Length: 396
Image (cartoon, rainbow, N blue to C red; front, side):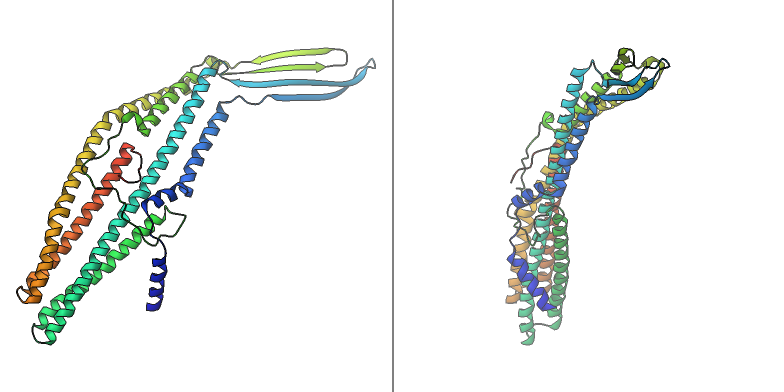
């Protein structure tokens, strides 16, 4: 079993670490990313087909006739017919096709951007899990060194067995924590792997994370793709309403020629629906009017909440940044130094065992709190980017 694990670790180490740039490149070639494009392209094509006129129909009728007077021969009829939709609203139909294409193209880019951010966020969170595991790996190595030195001191009779056992117990706790955090790191890699189809993830570079900063990029509401989608939906609803209010939503024309034994017939017919004899058109008009009013309210709501949400997210990120600075610049370095000094004092017989253990536990707690602060910061950061529809960059 040990040999299997050792061989697996060698094989994993031979695989190159995945970078943020490679994550972004991989997601753009993934099946999920391509499926978004295919789905929206299909919707554009379907709309274009629905807005087009139906193909003309050709009717050919053949027969053989024989009259009482003895005249006989072949008779036939040929006719060409076609149904035209909204024949007097060609300009509106052109607009409808334009706005529909713009809607689904914008939707495609928006969905792909959100998918890309999901992968980028997974990469960052996996790197944070890796960082926590590496912290505890270092703590375990340090504590192992302490235990070895205390073991020698106990053998020489310089310390009590109780002092040694306290550190042995702490070593076992650290080993347990390290194993748990490595398991969480592996889970985070599996979560990221769902977005990476081009290769199997063995490890991550993690030296290319977005910078934790007090300054964040601000968006423009008019550039937000959700704003564009709501605006386009409103335009499409307005055009749907125009179609439903049309006096002549459709008509069918037919040209025909009929050959009988003794005569030729030419015909032209036009079929016009009498909308006032039914309620269907009125029902459509009411439906599209409600949809238009709904789209208008959704757009107004988005405009009102955009700036408020932006301010809230920026304030939350500022608070996260201040906590990060507090831990990275003050609390964590201080806890680390206290742990190191307490360990040295223990070796030299100038410090107590209790002080060394307290310093270790304090350092461990500060590490966990620091890691949690970073995780929350990145979650909020990418929520902000997605909410404000800011474009992904290589590194901020």
